[in-house]
Image (spheres, chains in turn brown, orange):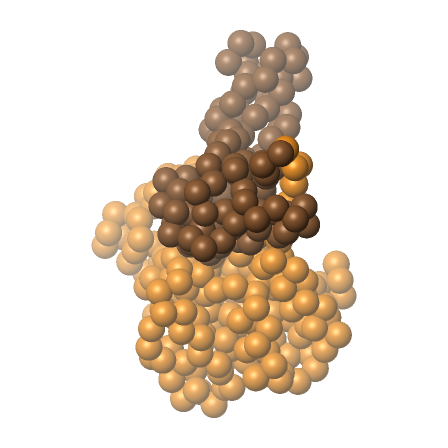
Length: 113
Length: 218
């Protein structure tokens, strides 16, 4: 529901980056969104087209990378995913949290060469 | 050309929240952010604590529209600022900073923030508070910790309000607590009814102790 606010922030960060590199155009913005942030990617995409108008981000591709909660099995070292997956599906041992699902950041901005 | 950025999307709000936190630290103010669904009993909780907790208290009321809650608080003789978001589903730290400038709470005071009634969005926004409280009413049903784990996981205290209606609506205590246990939050739960007064004094005593610890920086 608060995707309007966060989309404005994504565009602000991307445009600042473009300005630092003297680029009037942005080709692509990559954003990482953890599964527990509650952010609905479709809503961000919806607002993006509207809010990016008349900015360097207008026409840019918005690439959203979902980040699931990930745990590493203490026993067999295999990585397993899911907010409610507490134990390793292979050996039933509890896992150590390596990605908490709350990641929410602009990873990269692609500018024309 | 790809530029690596790695910048938190909520960085602007986080920075404002730090300003709020610094302001409160300098003036010895304790800020309490109150979250919960519409109708969970957030205003009742604040009204109860205004009566039960010692010292000077202030309130920042957040609503999409209206001044209904602010008027209730003002009638109690307590200084209150109303923020109307006009549709936004959460409060942000910038508006809290402005509200604090308006309220000018005295040193050592407690300031309650009643966030927008919503069990999703407000949990993502740090307001610079020293304590985050969730009012979760029995009337909403016993499945809430199962269905809204993110909000439950971000709070310091869970108040299960409207406990007097449990029997009437067939509220399953075991299922509610199972949800909290799954999230390792069972020790954060306090039960109360602001209508009958059951558990109200215990809640006030608990908060008094908790706030004393916070003031000592523990």
